[in-house]
Amino acid sequence: MDAIDVIRSKRDGGTLTADQIDWAVDAYTRGEIAEEQMASLAMAILLNGMTRAEVARWTEAMIRSGERMDWSALDRPTTDKHSTGGVGDKITLPLAPVVAACGAAVPQLSGRGLGHTGGTLDKLESIPGWRASLSNAEMLDVLRSTGAVICAAGSGLAPADRKLYALRDVTGTVESIPLIASSIMSKKIAEGTGALVLDVKVGSGAFMKTPETARELAETMVAIGTDHGLRTVALLTAMDRPLGNAVGNAVEVAESVEVLAGGGPSDVVELTLTLAREMLAAAGVSGKDPADALKDGSAMDVWRRMISAQGGDPDAALPSARENHVVAAPSSGVLTRLDAYGVGVAAWRLGAGRARKEDPVSFAAGVTCHAKPGDRVTAGQPLLTLHADDESRFARALESLDGAFSIEENGTPDLHPLILDR
Ligand code: URA
Image (cartoon, rainbow, N blue to C red; front, side):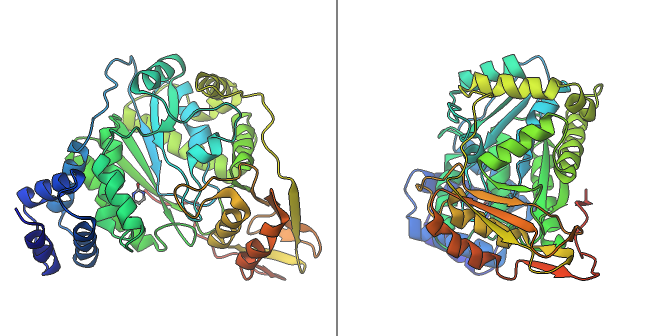
């Protein structure tokens, strides 16, 4: 087969055959198709799309490029969640322990932040001693002893996606629904979870800015899961304002611990409980209600054991910022808008995120929101606190907040409901 023929087929609006797809993904993974040829094919896919059969085959080929994990040795069903990423989205941290405390096992392979969206592993690494890299045998041990594990995917899992995602990132080809859907689903199917709940974010702080595009992505992913025999459910949830009050790394861990202790912001609690109920139902586990796991301390107990099993100290002080800068409300009235993207970019510029994959992150950097859209604020009261290791970071972070919030004397916020659709 020839790379140029495959590229021409897609460029001219054709449908790739199963053989063309299998060959292209395999040859690219082995280095037989050059990066520039795969970049061209990815752009042709972005521009011309893929049929349901093409997406299913592309996903299958990416799964077959590496190992498939197997949790059949566990004595309980597995279930997992994937979020398409947002600002202040720390839900995995309280969610995995809650679901484990209710009787399912959660083998959660997570990622790092890139751009304005945070990464679960970066957040957890702010806990002194905590280790993201585990062997498959260590993952199984942690799952057996605690019911939940959150760690990095090993290099053997969907290596085709690892290579292709890095290429898409630098060739303007990330924003393709078939490529996003197959990328996410190849990793989740290879991870071997028995059930999957997708949290597809919608709004300025998300990949998908509108409910229509988010629904298309959700339906594509649910179709891939269903075609692979994986029970898959998707929720569309709001990402037009930050989730919770904390955006960053250590600050989000602290907020997650508040939720596990029975407190925390109501939107974080509501989304955690909604996703937990979906994950348990998809896995066929009934019995304990997730809200009870937060009340009776059993979710906190799983959290502490899970963190310790990965080398972390759940009682250690979290890193705190050397420099803080308060943004005060310029007028009195109702906070009608707090833009997720603006706050996410501010946290990123403060050092919570990275510009390139290899950059370090600052664990202490981030933003604390003191008011949520709909709250009444008084001129001069703190609206946001910016945290950084170095005060030279504040000027650019403040630029990204310019126009990111509105206060109106008697306004009402025009927001997506937290859960838009299922
Ligand atoms: N996350 C992924 O894992 N892949 C994509 O293509 C986009 C987001």
